[in-house]
Image 1 (tube, chains in turn cyan, blue, brown, red):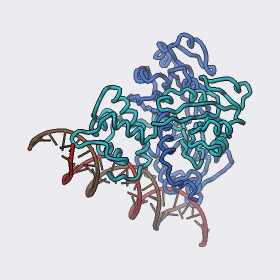
Image 2 (cartoon, chains in turn cyan, brown, blue, red; image 1 turned 180 degrees about the vertical axis):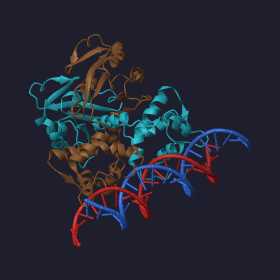
Image 3 (cartoon, helix red, strand yellow; image 1 turned 90 degrees about the horizontal axis):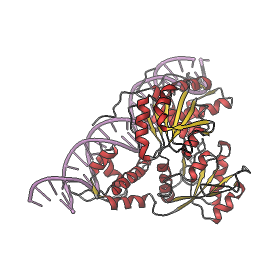
Image 4 (cartoon, helix red, strand yellow; image 1 turned 135 degrees about the vertical axis):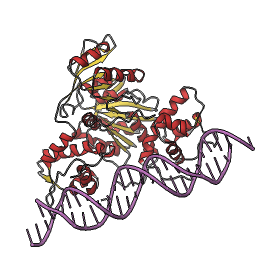
Amino acid sequence: MELRRVSEAVVRRLPKYYRQLLLLESAGVERISSGKLAQQMRLNASQVRQDFNCFGGFGQQGYGYNVRSLLGEIRGILALDRPYKAVVVGAGNIGGALANFEGFERESVVVEALFDIKPELIGTTISGKPVLHTDALEDYIREHDIDIGMIAARRSVAQSVADRMQTAGVQGIWNFAPLDVVADIPVENIHMTDSLICLCYKINHKLPDNDDIE
Amino acid sequence: MELRRVSEAVVRRLPKYYRQLLLLESAGVERISSGKLAQQMRLNASQVRQDFNCFGGFGQQGYGYNVRSLLGEIRGILALDRPYKAVVVGAGNIGGALANFEGFERESVVVEALFDIKPELIGTTISGKPVLHTDALEDYIREHDIDIGMIAARRSVAQSVADRMQTAGVQGIWNFAPLDVVADIPVENIHMTDSLICLCYKINHKLPDNDDIE
DNA sequence: TAGATTGTTAATCGATTAACAATC
DNA sequence: TAGATTGTTAATCGATTAACAATC
């Protein structure tokens, strides 16, 4: 059970293992082998075992992995066994979608409030969450021990919002503005448009379809 | 000018080059070297040249790359020099955000209509786009020559929506439902929750910060 | 026990980076 | 021309896959 360095590629696969194990558990599956799991996820069995062994030996020779206990281990590794409080800056379309994005509850991330500067929005609620003036951002983060700052604001203000969030003490930033914000805390920049652009590329550069290899 | 296979990693970088070149052009920059561009994008100069040379020799020894012409080349490679018509299935929060997602216009992707099954939504408009009953999906796609199908529907119906879109003739699918839909046409599955989960992981597994290497 | 499957080392593969002749 | 920078080949690095002894 020697722990090795966890590469970004491994980290990116962890949520996918988590999702698949959730499905297996709710389907009542008790145990699974690396081979079966790999098949279901279109991965390689060695890769699955390598990935898990970054964190410890969760399996048993001749048996495989117990779904429930593996799920628990991965939930712990992903730190989804504790709650997170979040705020959203930018109460437009994306901010509104974030405010009640389904799946947040399950992952224990709860949006507590939204922030905007438009007078007509302030004082309203979105999905039951209050919309406050962005001037109150730092105070709110400090007073409510906010863990995660979500940015759904315009590109031009995104970096300064990130700076303010970090200063006020959030532990991570989830950014949807179309530029990479930088911070000394963990940041996930989501570039939805990049994915759409890749789709356009693929539409116009069709490759021989090797999806149906069995 | 020998063309090599274009890996997925290269395709994923193309939108980032495109964005950076847009910035440079609007800043009035006329030419750029692979070294400068790499520095700005936190890439390696060799990588930049390798990437571009997947598609042809766009540079000039001793000079570098002309920003405007390189931008044009990449726009062409990404096939952003033609319009795309799109529909959105699911007129909830995410669907609403997609209906007027900023950046679509610039990338020439225009949402023409949304589809839902909720009676109270049908006949309304969202961001000026009509909301129609999902029963009319196939006919609409055929009659309006829709290129891209966007899925912002519940997980349980996402795959069948994808099947119907494909049958009706869309060329690509942009899926936001929390499962991978499969099709014989290009598909981009966006798992926003996966990114949030990775953020939780990183918050709880802080690594020595090597962001400030200069 | 025999069969199955892990954990882990070794081999392979592909992507990134370095080097440098070509050339503007 | 001299300096700069590309295009491209070679070297390195890291991730994926294969192999197999350990062991349940």
